[in-house]
Image 1 (cartoon, rainbow, N blue to C red):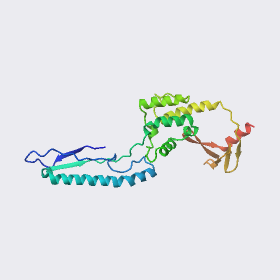
Image 2 (cartoon, rainbow, N blue to C red):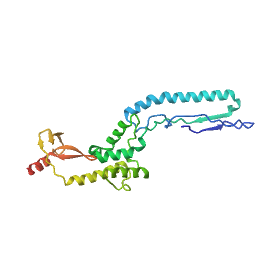
Image 3 (tube, rainbow, N blue to C red):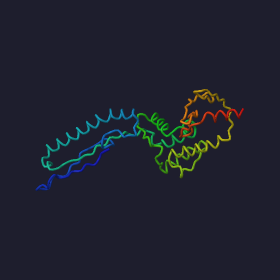
Amino acid sequence: MISATRAEPKSRPAETPAPVITLPSRTTRSRTGTAPKFFSSGTAAQWEVARRPLAAAIRQAQREAERRYREAHPEAGAISVKADLFVYAKRPKGFSHHPVIVAEWFAVNREALRETNAGTVARLRDKFAPYPVPANLLTRPLSPKALEQVGKKLAEHGKSVDLKANNTLSKIRGALQGKASTEEAAATYNVQMAFASDVVVVGGIEYPVQTDKAGYKRIRLQIGPKREWLRCDVLEALAQRSQ
């Protein structure tokens, strides 16, 4: 990327100065030169390792180019040059299709559908490493073209949502979760539950027991994007009545 440069006269010369020069300035996005805050700690460290020597080399090249020009053109002594330097991570091949990729994860992978936005971002970071996928990617509105592609991909798997009302990947996930909950509501489950003083076992999965301020024992369960507390006495009473 070549950024614009501008020249400003220090003072009005007696004669018309030579044409204003433009120095090349390549690099990447970030005026401060620091890694954006949405980077993960690992990618931020990689970014810093690569960014600093690259930015330093480019600034040195700019200074050297300006010095040589001024030596060859003394009339440029009255010209000041300001050049912006941008440093950014290039998007990997295929990343532009991430809305379709994520929508398909939601459609075919129950675990992906139930995880949080942070969990999905982590999946994308694994897939497109070392590109620093933004943490807020799933809450960004999708373009009309992306929404159209997402709708087609969902339709391939027998799924559909109102894409006008659900125009972000996070909202699309929520809509699909609601439909999945409705479909599962009619299902019948035969699950074994066991209660101990420090753990509740449901279907072979152990859930640690914690005691709240009121003295009730409870377990915490991931339900969609939220984590909910369930009281052990209520679960045990429900299990006893079902026998």
